[in-house]
Image 1 (spheres, rainbow, N blue to C red):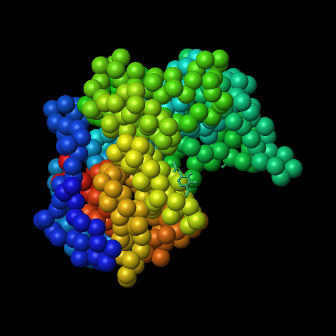
Image 2 (image 1 turned 135 degrees about the vertical axis):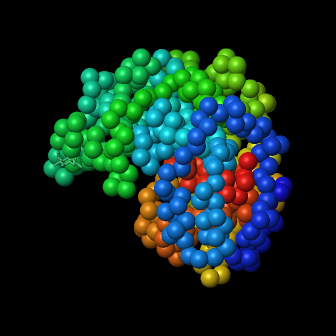
Length: 423
Ligand SMILES: *[C@@H]1O[C@H](CO)[C@@H](O)[C@H](O)[C@H]1NC(C)=O
Ligand SMILES: *[C@@H]1O[C@H](CO)[C@@H](O)[C@H](O)[C@H]1NC(C)=O
């Protein structure tokens, strides 16, 4: 490991030594991106990293980030495109989100994987989110939904539940991706499509191009990037359709890379199910070696200690990379500085590598921290403005030692990674 040793007592500014930044160790896991393989050579970050930097308190970190404002930016695997890497403004899990995230320097692209009625794998965050992420309820396919649209009435919310497993791949491909949201007061299917949070936008939500997993492989391969497919837990009883077992679903994921001629060294398969990661380790060892176990077992104060204890179980099961939500990794120290959490310290002790999610997911940071988003409750008192985003990233990189960050707006992480030479 080339990361700084974790010190709970270390204050934030003490952790910043300009010019002496550690290198991350992707190299032992995967080759670096060679610019010639990356057809998008003009990485563009847009105004956001500069806005965030300007919003910071004065100090060494702000100075360092400000000094990079005119640097030429390169793509980096440290910047992982969450649901495509541009969901702050683009419909998630679409070609458009992937292209925008790649333009902003994401070096690894995510596809959340669910299956259709005819067992094709497609990119969708949940098997049953088509009613909030596509226009399905306002099309003829709405009739095939597990729960077709029902208008609001007498104070009861409008409802719908539409799953990828309700329709065929060909039908799925006729849908338009939109910003995730719905209108619980809707009286008509068209009205139900509304509900994009005010801090996002519908500017690019005209008809996002939805993607099959094989199409995603071919697109991301053509962009010269790495892959991080997340196998979503089935939302229907398995085996589905007679003999489609969980194991067949888990195997199909690896098979589609093999069939496309993609080296497993470029694939970082993820799952919340230890079971799935264990399957890959046992049956597809090369695929499983880079598997990422997503962890959401410590979402409350009561369960958090259990999540820390679970890390030993994961290690013993052969897991090498764990990915919790970022507030699991950061706590508030003296003077409201961010410091590594007990979870971060234990993961490091066990030699587990860490990824984390998801930056830029939840709107203005100060609003989120002050509000009810449990993710940020533990650091709320130390989070007062958008510029704190880079304080968070800095402690995650320099003290916790994460090797990549999932982001809904890739430029934020790409900028930090370039400024600190994380390749
Ligand atoms: C939600 O639906 C209600 C009832 O149809 C409508 O009055 C309202 O304008 C809709 N909200 C949005 C954001 O479209
Ligand atoms: C992890 O911790 C949670 C909460 O303490 C517990 O409910 C869960 O069963 C644990 N999971 C594993 C895989 O050990």
